[in-house]
Length: 177
Ligand SMILES: [Cu+2]
Image (cartoon, rainbow, N blue to C red):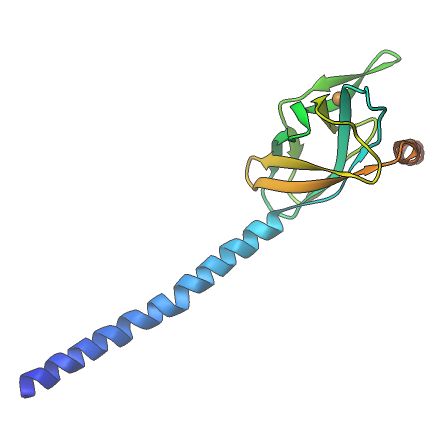
């Protein structure tokens, strides 16, 4: 009788000692890491331009924000609409602007970057179906730190790029003054 009650109270002590640790720390830690992952990188305003049905390639533009104190890099992109998907930059060669493939696009700590006409973009090569205004296409981005992002890209009509490009040019002119 005495032994049983001692054993019971030891058992009860063991339970109360172990359970709170399990109950308090585990879900909290999980919530914290999910929250951190969610805040590290955000990707918005993904769009592409409508093209004639015969166009072999298209481009995707979007806005990336790095909320982390650590730098990150966009290292690859993928879309079921294209045979090959590459990360591209525009470079000046004399008076000529030319696209080049880049291995990664750096997103420094606490910074934002807009992929836009005339700058960085995601190149869709060997399109499997035409880019039609009002439709959407799927895109998956892979970041070195933040991991994988599945996006829906809005396809805009063909003058969308022109105005965005014009805005970009205007902005570039302003920043020279
Ligand atoms: Cu390109």
